[in-house]
Length: 140
Image (cartoon, rainbow, N blue to C red; front, top):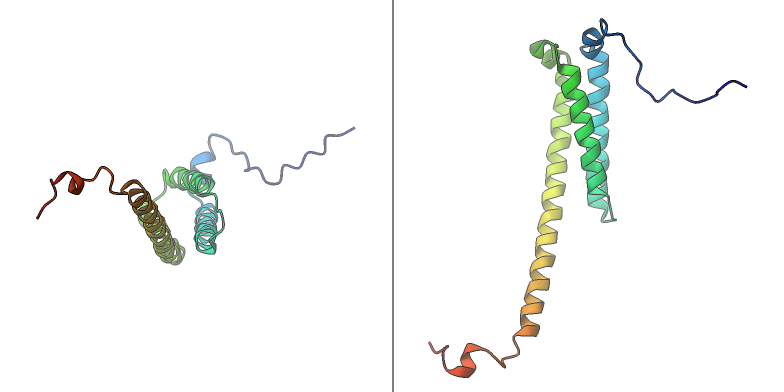
C-alpha cells in the first residue's frame, strides 16, 4: 500500500543554492503580505464582533508571518521590494490602522469595565465603619 499523505499545505523544499533566490522571489513576498493582511483582517473582525476571540493565537500567527517576511527579505533588495509591493504594503498599512483602532477601542472598554468593578468594590468596602470621618480626621 502506498502512503497517501496530503503534503499540499507544506512549503516547497529548496536546495541550499536555491534558498536565497527563492526567498527573494516577489511572488513569495506577495503571498506573505497577503497572509499578514488576512490575519489582521480576521483579528480586527474578531475584536469588533464582541465574541471571545483568541488574541493569543492571533498574536502567535502574526509573529510567525512576520518571521516569514523577515526571512524572505534576507538578501533581497529593499528598494526593489518597496517598489514591487507598494500597493500591497499600502493596503497592509490601512488594515493595520483599522486593527489598531479596534484594539484601542477594546482596551478602552476593558479599562472602563475594570474601573467600574474597582469603584463597586471600593463602595462595598467603604461602608463608613472604619472611615477617617468617623474618627474626626477628615475635616475640611
